[in-house]
Length: 472
Image 1: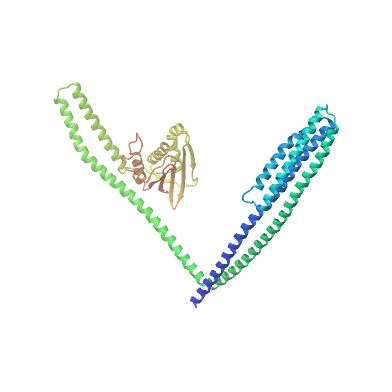
Image 2: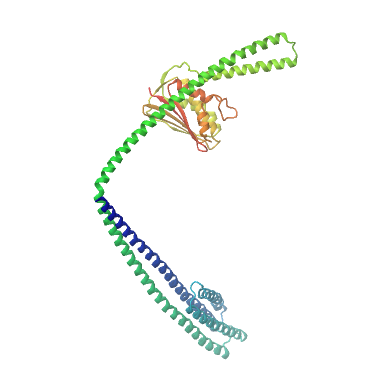
């Protein structure tokens, strides 16, 4: 039964597709014919219009010359003088139209021959007008018998020109009417094809509704199952995301703890030989004769030993769990105090600061001084990543899932993935004069508060550091 239904469905769709395909082919063919016929109608209309323009120019020449004969005022010659350009322009347009290779027909060639005859008549007309004007000027602007004879001759020639133009236009009008009728036939054909296509579409829609109603029960059940699977998938994705965040926090703590162990091991292994070097240097200073060279070398050894010892001390301080003095405080106030400490640097680089604080944010149990140092490090890191005059620092506080969140955003140079994965490592820095311990110390402070800090960034678009702390 199901197989027979599938066959009927496929047969119905195939029949509808074939009908629509042929309908499309006919529509396309008719549309092309419609476009071609429309071009022919426009072409004929252009011919008629340009012949009118040509005739108008000749009449302007005749009226101008006669006005000059009657009044003797040379101002009447302006239409005559400008008519030459009108006539030439119309003539060249007509020549181009009648020589159009795309539309060239035997009829066009006949019309072109008539245009050549018309051109000869126009030249004769202008020649006679010029002759009459010359005689008029030679006889001190007096109308003579020869001028009258030329005017009679001009009028006869003008009648001939008008007759030639009207003859050509009449033929073109008949041609245009025939083309318009053909155009209307094509339009009717297109309408018939569109109606047929509409009927086919209606039949196809009816058939589709029939099939849809028949299969709706199964489809509805499948939709319910799909929705149930989607909800389960979203829950699993949500659980996976939460587990992933928890794993990242644990990895961050584990990485920090491992860094601390390595730092203490390095400190122990380095300070022992460093102490021996210092003792040996003191002994040498007592036994070796003093001179400028020995003083310089001893001073160099002592200075670098002190520097190594200080580096070890800084590393230990940035990775050890410190003693904290907890008190309830507002994150918004701590951030404002950190901004005040960075105010000179922010003002010097002309950076715009946006504060998007949650006014209802709960207090947190923190060591205020140390947390202020952590936020100051993050703010200064953002400030140094931005260009002078175009930097924009945005600080956001909010509550999410029982956590108090702080986000410090900049529109600076940004970081790549490798850089992000190493930013909290000791001595890792991209700054020319940075120690590489600022963010390590920041992470130490936040981890001591049982919080988490992480960074998101994109090259050329800036970075966002997020701090999550337990609300009080």
